[in-house]
Image 1 (spheres, rainbow, N blue to C red):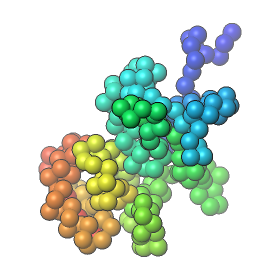
Image 2: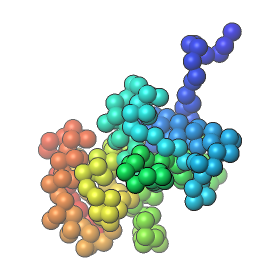
Image 3: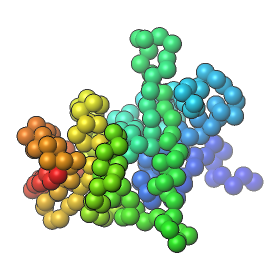
Image 4: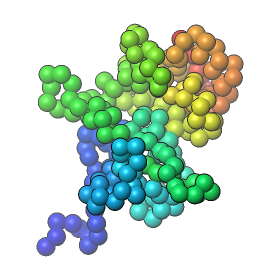
Length: 231
């Protein structure tokens, strides 16, 4: 008798990854990895670009594989994974009009998130991951700067969801410039967002505050929440 309850292919859930980034994101990332590895084993070079193996799919195709999610939910999951540098999205289609996305997993990033801390054998607590969210910028700045305050796992997860929502509301360049990688600390009804520098905090306060405030209040389900921007 099969160990599966039903006669259908199972999907893997990696406990340490689910602890680090949430169940939905971990399941989707593993599914991407499964297909990339499938094409690697098949040596299907149509899926090999820039030294990596990729899977191409539309949102609807992803939903066929995981029908319990809506396409909007899948889009949010992808945005969150991109914001955490766990998933790369590109376009390697033959024709310019074909905008189907290609996906590959940043395995080194997944390994870093799930590796045990020095001197321990168990999974890394998610609370220990919070400082890294604001200390590694896409352009390499800030890596030697002060560590940001730690936050609890629930706040970290909700802030990642906020970043995913914000990424869908603005251009990729604007998101990468002002929001990617920055951290947030919650104390009562005050959300403190730690920006990259004084210019960044002023820009967010004067240009993006209504969008950020609306998004954060919606994700945290707190209409009284206020935001403070600090360099």
